[in-house]
Image (cartoon, rainbow, N blue to C red):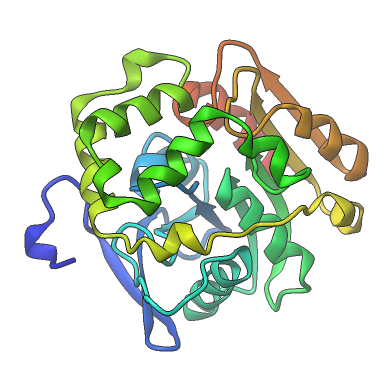
Length: 281
């Protein structure tokens, strides 16, 4: 996508991550502070700014260097047509992003697909030491069929794989399935998502694979904090118990009257509890 054509997406910084690829990202805070990397969720038109715009400044004000990249295949980052957009490929983008910034130790915060990416990355003995993880309705916990058998996820893939389905009406309908508080779904948010989705190749959703990470969760010995909306129609909150029972240093909060994105729907609570968790020794 030519940056001159961007109308609704917020353009900030780019960095080379290897293999001729670059990632677009948002940065807040001071580089000498402990780094936190925010990984956004998936779906047509998903991008970092829409996912984390209510959170980055708060974390930065409380002493963290905050980096929020658009994943490969999303937003203004590279979108190679010949890639397979499985969780391994997305995690390789995170690895390249961390290496490019010279980061050796970090906290990861991941929502939905970004949560699965964070878990996958941490499970595969990365060069960067992951100190803690904050998860928000993470995908990849439990059989894929458990989250695929609902109209919201089916619509997500239909829009991503079929250009004729990419309309403002369908994107709004998708948001109505993701967010419990419908007043948060603005015309600008819909327009931003449509613009971002128009720049995505359909291969992103044709090849998307995550797998079930649950059997390996017991390998994670680091502190994990997870938020789940009780009304999450994308990733069922049944995964919360799975996570809590398998990760020995985890804690899980289930929020009533909340959908798939607590960091958007309840930002004050999410910000406060997450920063408190990150600062714990």
